[in-house]
Image (cartoon, rainbow, N blue to C red; front, side):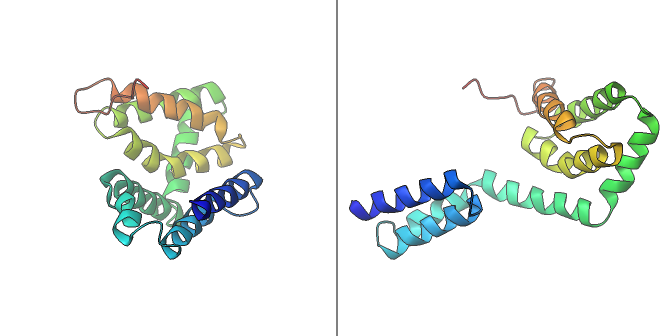
Length: 156
């Protein structure tokens, strides 16, 4: 019991301080719980077998590939050419594309796929990426509600 509380306290301090990346803190906490025999290997690995976790890992690999190959930059330059200098036009365009994809693909998949493209788009336009990322997130939720095969947002 005390080992669990100590690991929890150390993890909380490291999460809050931000001196260590949060993924490293989480994995080190898991390893510490394993080494102290608080968790079994099956219990520790149970969260990684969730289909959502596996999908997220795969989508971020695809998103990283889109960014590394330069496809994100090419797509963003085409969108910028179409939108011109208008930030409003750019936001609306990003929301329309996101909403359309989100109607047929899961919201998580839509955001993970478009994230590198939108970040590259904002960088090329000289904008703060959050100006496009928040509308993209809302558009993904709206797109999920458009069709029966989209992913509706949770009520909670």
